[in-house]
Image (tube, rainbow, N blue to C red; front, side):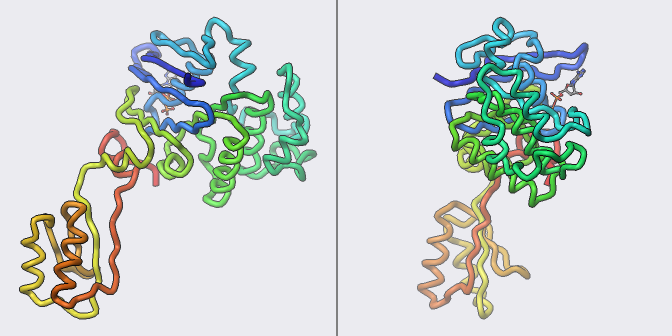
Length: 305
Ligand code: ADP
């Protein structure tokens, strides 16, 4: 049984249909990323899942509980990362963790949690004096202080520099390692690709694709492609014979060497023909499709690099 299941969620704000039809599941111990452009309906979806917003239609089950019918029981099991900016600037790290711990019947040990999040040296630092990465780590600590089975983390690395982002990613992996299932909202493809077991791509309030990052990238349209470099120019007749191979759709010679597109079997076919002609590429580079290709093909907006 999944730890979290949302079915056919729908939510309109006046005439704006923020979420049209979103269904998703989170299995125990997994990280599922909800990926989509700004305005796709991601935050509204997770707010309905956490019971912070009432859905117009659809059902949510968190460990079998309905967040609307049983908000207190759900709050004990589900940690939602609060937007860091909502904390008062003068509260210290220790005070914030103690305050949030007081909301729960069986909270985590604040010292252990701060150790896990690398904030031990910052307990007496005021929120406003923390770096962006430290503020994010504190907001993750606050989401975890109730020892939830599930954590929802919304745009947790937005605004962080690449170094701080990688630190937060490592942290998320160790949180998952400690047994927490995670629903991660993001508009960064790289974040989804790096962390998620499954990715749910949402656009204009609807799920447009879902699967593991590998499954999704395999689904991207377009030919398989690779580039080769040679120490010497290839004879024209050899180039023509490569172009005529049934696996090859196109072969161009340019500044970056020879680019071949076609079926996946084009690579062994081309290398075999080259070998028979005593030509060895000095370099072969396959051009793999990325989650970004899938995202661009399926959603209405350009991705954030
Ligand atoms: P995302 O998290 O993917 O950026 P949101 O769920 O925040 O998307 O927003 C989806 C749509 O709903 C957007 O068009 C947004 O402007 C609108 N929206 C979000 N919150 C509200 C609100 N409280 N009142 C009115 N419209 C809202």
